[in-house]
Image (cartoon, rainbow, N blue to C red; front, top):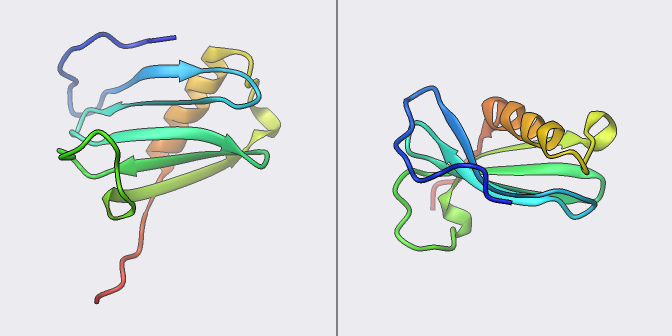
Amino acid sequence: MTIAAERELGSGEFAIEDISAGLHASGFGQVGDGRSFSFHVERRVLLVEVYRPRLTGPVPHDEDVVAVASRKLTDIDLFDERSLAAAVRDAVAAAQPVARTNR
């Protein structure tokens, strides 16, 4: 199901562009500061990756991930899109920066 229409987001806004509920829930969206994110369920955990602004290609690479979050599924109804969307919103807001090693 597509949730957000094409529009500009304000700096504090959040939009899920696509969401699939269920045991294998997944989706993606945008944060108002220009970053995008994706989420999926893996091993009883909701995983969220936030990507750097202005990606050049349609598929992010490992180096494009700037923050991550995970959340146990105990309080999330994976079959209710509203519950899933709220959990994703909270996870994106709580995402922690990814440590980078100098090469």
